[in-house]
Image (cartoon, rainbow over all chains, first blue to last red):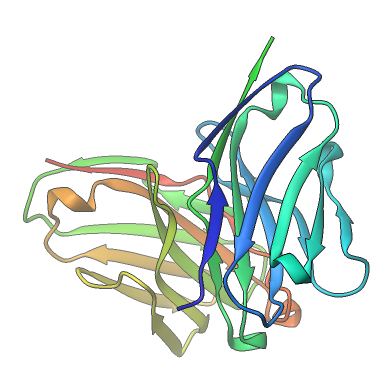
Length: 114
Length: 115
């Protein structure tokens, strides 16, 4: 079965440090790729997505992700963490075209230390 | 006003009770989804509906049922609640016109506790 793996259920960084959250998917067929963010006591909101075209995708709040087909990865990065980035981040993939559904990873909780 | 609303936001119930969670949207989207979130397990799809007359089971539909009363309303029912259905439940919507990319918009969630 197709799957999404997020390495590290918990990542802690210092304010101002690089944020790197990892996501790998299982199929050699490139899917559509998404990162969602969930702030405490809220629903999920889209951070960024890759569908076609440029493999480096920029999202909101200074985040970006790069689609690497050869590595079946879509890692999320931000050069300098801010306290307000503390949240849970979910990678999601979609296969199957218009009838496909999203498959979510298990999430990575990001903590930012002052 | 929020585009996707869920009621109730919190609910505590007892084993064996029937519970309905409701979702309404003003985004005009065709597609609606119900997920549950458990710590360490991410989001898992319970049911989804691509249209008022189209209902599909997701990964974990056992013990749940749904009703799509209108394009804007999608309800999730637990016929006989059990403690392992204690979770955070999310409704989401997406636009068929964007079906290839399927950006989903989430409600604020319903926290359900089954004692």
